[in-house]
Length: 253
Image (cartoon, rainbow, N blue to C red; front, side, top):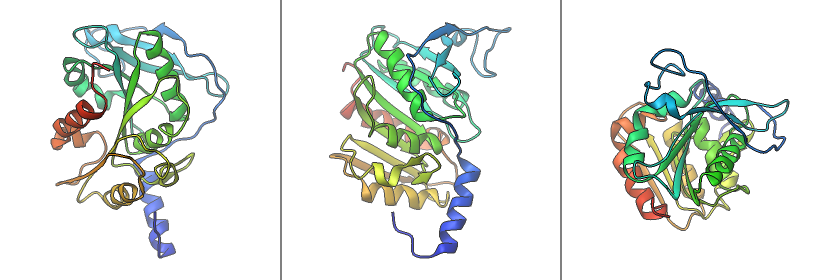
């Protein structure tokens, strides 16, 4: 990533800290799953009564122990071999992905999303461990903003399952704990970079990450609009993302 003026860098950092965040540590522990309690027709403020059957708590193994709110569902056909792990943006939650779960399970993928205010890469590892227990053999990572940066970094780390593709939506190139600008230089996994044209500085971040990426098959798409993160799926990115995953991380494995 190139930076030519200090004031510009400070401004970009301020915007990043407004749109995405994380703090945490990384002490490894075996992932665990326990049913999450439900209240009324919804859970986590967004899941329907039917979706709430897939709610659980995930042990991410962070310092002091961290039980993350999580959601899992197998593909509609059952026995999915490829799963999508969703990582949310700053001050967000797994709820931002809830409108899109069915789009992926209908296409044959299992889905797992979690809410984390700590080290997202540890959450991704724990999620991968849980998915391995369920018979999944490969992963696709989709992340929004901070979650996108963490997903790019996680793809460069050892995980319980192989990462087949990464989708980065409005990710900053650097963020506390995560330096995607460095990670993408050695990640050869197929990577899809996207942002909206009026969402600065993340539009420029998407371009710089794409240019620095060592991915054997990479794609950059700047969509019209000013929206950020998971909202790109609503604004036209969903069919493009699904097509990219179908090519590089097919549901059948």
